[in-house]
Length: 303
Image (cartoon, rainbow, N blue to C red; front, side):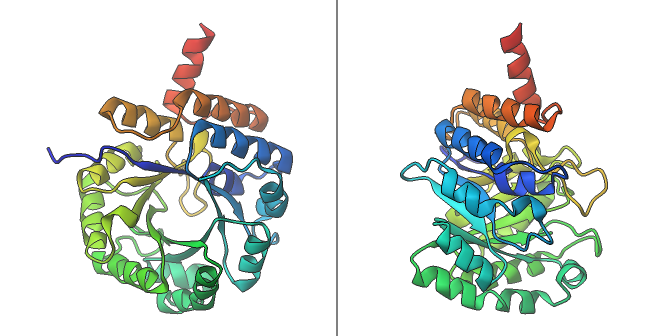
């Protein structure tokens, strides 16, 4: 067995990537409470906001209010997704620590969703990336459909590598390799990650897995085996994927933490506090959380 990393960074994406797909409005006060709970759990990086048009993502309309209201902790990176210079201006005003830009490894996905090629979509971020660096902030690039696309199916390894290289050249500090529709399996995961490592340093690559086919934890383990040490997850499994019918969205943070504990891998995060945060937001949303570990721990406490 390959040696696994001794410690990993977990990027909590529930407040942004998780909640943005909720149809019912989630008040800023609830989002602030969720971020504060996650901060107290020990996360070093929380994706808290998205400065996109409220017309397209109404759930994120309160992002400025959320960023202004959270209790910031020294050393914690609070990230914001920005699609353009207008979004960047808002992110700077909100004192985001990290700006997230995005592209796709699938040409079909890029054309269908934003009506331009992959190369054109990345080029649009050149001014944003320069401004981010000029302001001394971290820049993170996220690559969707790195393992499969709802329109074209398989995505070639070289296509992923090409976008990794483009993100690298923009000056990204971290690059997310995302399984947007949750179709990856362990062997494919390792092939994609090993190809990405040839384009960017391994300690700057992150795995962002969705659990549509129940493979997310297996894919995280497969990524650990090739040296990936940054992972994205969503408290209580918040989120869904609008591109794949029945997709369950992001892998649950509680499940990832439970697995890391069992592997003896340090995260610096208190699982019990995360379980409480998951129960809090699930109760507000009026449904049972999607984390098996979180629900089992909560049930055990209740007995």
